[in-house]
Amino acid sequence: MNRAESVFEFRDQSHLERAPRVEQLRELGFTWADLEDEEYWLDAVAVMSRETYQELEKASAGLWAVLDKAVRYIHRRRDLYDLLGIPPVLWEMLDDCPLPEPGLISRYARFDFAVADDGTIKLLELNADTPTGYVEASIATPWICEQAGITSPNTAMKGLLAAAWAVEQPDTAACVAYGSHEEDSGTIEALVQHSGLDVQCVDCLDLWIDEGSVRVGEDRVIQRMFALYPKEWMAVDEGGEALAYAIETGQLQLFNGPHSILLQSKGLIAAVWGMYELGLLFDAEERELISRYVLPTYNKPVFSGNFVSKTVFGREGGSVRLFDDSGTLELKDEDGFDSSELFPTVYQKRAEMARIRTAEGELHLLTGMFVINGKPCGLLGRAGGPITGNTSHFIALGVRGLTR
Image (cartoon, rainbow, N blue to C red):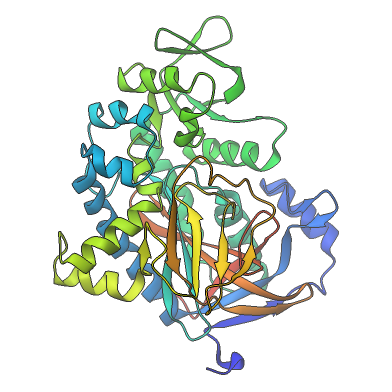
């Protein structure tokens, strides 16, 4: 397909004065549009065709059910926990805690897709444990799209979040470096505000645990906590084992729930692909979905070329390596934390992402789709190099001709 016929249309807004727009976004709660004099937010809208969005929404719902089914198959199978790279310190917690009802293992998640210029959709990974980008998607994107006269499908996010937290009822929301890490702090504050609940925000580093009782300060006991704290860190952090014990004994209810780590592991996609190839577990409709949207993914380097390697718990591009058609290393992430020494690696066929021409040059466009309270509901656009890492930009994604 000619680039001019892409399913994405790039609408540059950089001719508008940036400073007052950044200030308006700050007042709405998106305070990191500029980071240390760097423009994290690209003042533009990438407009997706209505047909592509509708297919993406349907694919997200179907893949959500497929991955949920896979987790239920893996639950309490410790050999498969090991295959997914789940740290053994969490196995007791995963076995003892009951699985949530279908579709709600995680109530706050985000798919990352490669959507090519020709509209081909491929799943890269699922961030089902501690996804960020919520402020960008739920607050900034609708405002930016409205200013540009473009429809945003993200307006349902706040209501779905409120419905999810009405069930979970956290009394505390936590992140590391609360008050100083602008993005994570702003994320949990937005979640709390949208929930409508009386929830206290705290720093994970201020928590302490006494015989399974999680506390902050001298007297306050935390019983139900939402935390932007990756569960695999319990394997390496001081106090991680104590936190796992608090959860497995029921003294702390953690959100997202314990089993979201099974959805989070990139090893789950390898397991789904392996079962697809072996003709296990999935019915004909699910197999068609996997064939169309899931990339061949393995726990071993079986490709001769044109593949990606990444650790099962790599985040923000950390540990990602791209190999060309000849199997030669083409590019590796230099910015994110490389977790390859801590967790196993998966190998995945490469997929094409759409490219957009911006004032920053030609950038690859990564398409995120939030799934909140079990429903696909919000687009998140990020633009950067072939590896989407910490240096990528946020760009609003809208939909052409969509009616709600």
